[in-house]
Structure formats: C-alpha cells, structure tokens
Image (tube, rainbow, N blue to C red; front, side, top):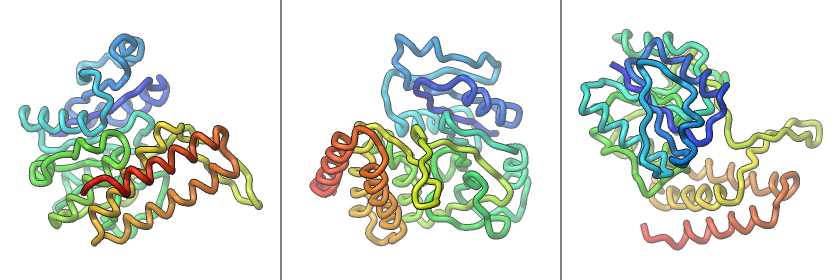
Length: 267
C-alpha cells in the first residue's frame, strides 16, 4: 500500500489539482499537510475526495510533516511513502508504481522520478541527491534511517535525509521514463549572452536557511564530495542575484548571514 504526503503553503489551485489528480487513482491515501496558517487554510482546501485527509498543526516545517506521515504509515500498515511538494505533478505515476512495486528486478533503495525530462541511464540509475518531491520510499527503509532531521525545517530536508541514508549504505535511484514536472521558487526568465536563464527568485528569508543548511551539510558529511558541488551551484546563484534580481542588498545580506550561521554552528 502507498501513502502520499503533500506539504502545502498557500497552494495554487491549478497546480495542486494537477498534483493530486496525477496520483490519486494509484495511491491508497493522500495526506495534505497544511503549513498555511490555520486562520486561512480552509480557503485552500481545494480537494474533496474520499482518499484525501487534511492534517497539520501550524508548524511550518517540511521535515515535521514528513515524520508525521512516516508515523501514520507505520501505524496504518502502509508499505511505501510517496513525498510530494505542492508545485509538482507526475506525467505517468501508474508506470512509476509498476516499475517499482511489480518489478522483481527493481533494486532495493529510495526511488525518484526524472525531474523535467533528465535522461536516466538504464532502468534504474543510481543518483546522489533526489529531491523530496516524487520520492517513493519503502517505510522499512525510513525506519532504518530514523526519519527526517527536524533541525532542517524547509531547506535541505531531502539532502540531509539522503546523505544519512547513504551513510547507512542505502542507495537512491532515478527510474527510467518517469517524469515529474516541478517548479522551484518563483521562477523568472532572463536572457544573458544568448542564453536563457531561469532565476529561482527566492526571497531573503528563504535564502538565509538555504545557504546555512548547505554549508552545514558540507561540514557534516565531508566524505560525500557531491554535496560540495551543490554548494557551488548556490554560489552561482549569487551572481544571478547580483546581475538580475530585485531586492539585491537584502538578498545578499541574507546569504552572508546564512553562510556565517552555517560556518559557526556546532556540528
């Protein structure tokens, strides 16, 4: 049996409906964890379906929501947990389900779709860092990992979970032919030297924990060089912010504060 958890925060109706409609006929239950403030959350309950339950206790934390779903899955006999962001949807979730649940050749591990059409080599390609959205995880492996680290509330939740899994020898795989459409941030398109650049356009209050948590992960898991490559990508974002984004001063100050917090936090 598959339990899905979708974490929402002022969700867009069309995207959330696409999200749920892409999985609802193939999973056994969907928990919608509302990080939208309780006084407003009822206005964002767009889905009324027998398989859908609304949960949440006002804590604005993705890791807390995922741990809630893990406990729910264990208490109710689910075999797999599907974790989803609100701004994602599958192109063919039933195929994803078949390739993992009904395939004797499927390797044991944590599964991920291809994000927006990335080519997957082989039926199951071992990868470093799948994102939260679209991960299909055997509940028994979550038990082994011990759930999600709630010190990471919103940003780097997926990275820390997968790095911890890799420490235990648990592998992560992208599944061939499975595409997840996924939106990051509040995207803005710009042209630069003949190239199209997609800016994530995160506000300052998101940038601080992003940089803080990435630096903490580099310090906490030095044996995994690929996490340093991800930090290099965030360094590139500083250039894009400086060149193209608004509110530059506040964003760059937030990044600096995040870097200092990440470097000084005890590990």
